[in-house]
Amino acid sequence: MRVPQQCVMCEINNGVYVPESTFMEYNINNESHSSDIVFLVEANECNTFSLENSIVSALEEQLYSQKFINSRYAVIAYGSQLPPFDYPRTISKDNVVFINSTNILRQYLKHSTAFSKSYDGSTSKSDMMHAISIASRLNFRTGVSNTFIIISCSRCDIKQMRFDYSSILQYMSDEGVSLHIITNSEFKVEKPRKIRHIYGFDKQFVYSNRSPEGSSELRHALHVSNSSFGILS
Image (cartoon, rainbow, N blue to C red):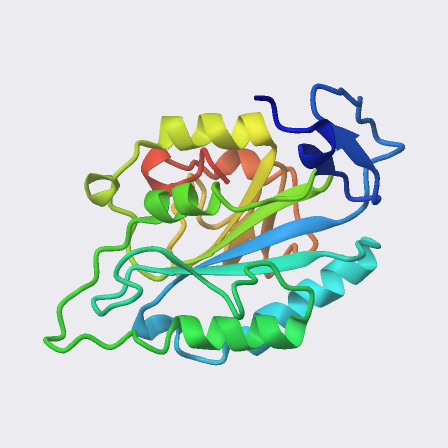
């Protein structure tokens, strides 16, 4: 017995319902300028500072400047020595994973590091790949961009990862996921005198004291290995 067609449908972000076996072509004109943003926070002591205020404030400013509206947020905590975040888990309230309020987002981020201290002082095993895999199963909206923001403080050790980067890269390429990584790491460049005090980089630019808005000319001097998640971000 087939399920009635009115019971099997997909709601698009603009409120339109697409029935089963019906196709709709998406283009830049009917795509919403919005995003489903997932924070993947390593539940470790290094992230127990007031990151929720500085990061959320900076994110709000950028979304506003880019005219993003109705964005949703979710938080996944991972990498703790203590339950429950010794396994990547979503933080939710009343079974609601995605939220619209940045005030609630701040509470979620603060809660993600509430169980960060280890009884024996041992180092946590931080599996970013596993956290990304869990994030990929969330219920994302159709027609909006998907953004993952990893806040990590442990060294990326591929040997501790459940999945290899190529399988995660394939998923992110297929689904159009943008990955951003916030971590405390040193950069190695070919000409250190030319680039000093680097804040970060992306596919096109390097951000530093000298070029806070980004420099495309300096990007070629920065080499990123596969093990540091450079391929994914």
